[in-house]
Image 1: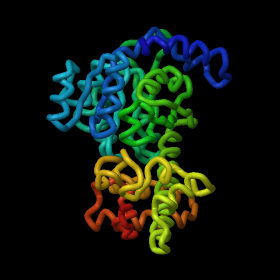
Image 2 (image 1 turned 135 degrees about the horizontal axis):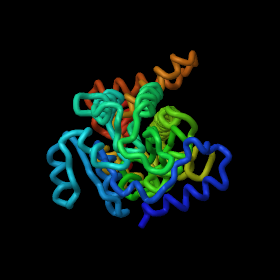
Image 3 (image 1 turned 135 degrees about the vertical axis):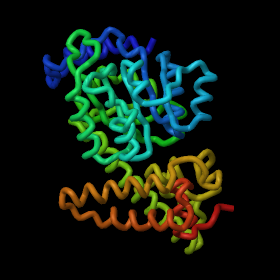
Length: 342
């Protein structure tokens, strides 16, 4: 079973890594059999489903009754509150829309930390895309707690911020990339869970660094989507078909994910949001939110980011114009007035 790979993984890490402190080394005895999952939206639903397929015993919570019933019908234990999930889980994963939702799930009236300073879960993993400051604040609160049941060298619970890249398609196929911040040996102990939901897991450093990496990734993604859309619309205006220009991009220096895997022009590529009227995928309102996070982070460190500001303005306008629920690639049609490929 996938969960029993933890022992071999951590053993290998102990032999090969100079960064693991004996004071924090986490011994493993397949102790993460019980996994709690909070937040069963477009991404969380699929991630939790992949954990279930990998053999983990799941307990889930979401404010959406219908999705809770779906999991219950599959034989998965459901709980009324995040606190109840934590009370029955060795490890808890959260996948939520924003920083305020994460703070509520951790610190709210029925949150994970409302049982005092004693926690059952050994590791709490937040895969939401939020600001690094909030990740670090929650991580500090978690590390000040004690474990209800101590095993081996586990003395205190640990939080990992582990946002993902790849979107709904990668969540469905289990090919996500996790960007992980926090204690490195906790990352190594949790790695089998990441590999049950994704293809890659990359350690980014201390608490909050996973969240910082995700903000930077989505900033680059937003700018590349705008650049590809702008170039394709210019090409159409100059008489070049989008499919022709896409072939040129993808075989030359302009190649990027926005052109070769997530093309924004309806009719050029199958299986992407642009082929289904920009339904599904990564909502424009979420891209706008992530750009706001990037802009705020840049201000905090005194960095000028003109492309961030421009992208932020464009996606904010896109949302105000009523396209907030459509995939962010709809900027091609609704901001640049690009034409479908006939």
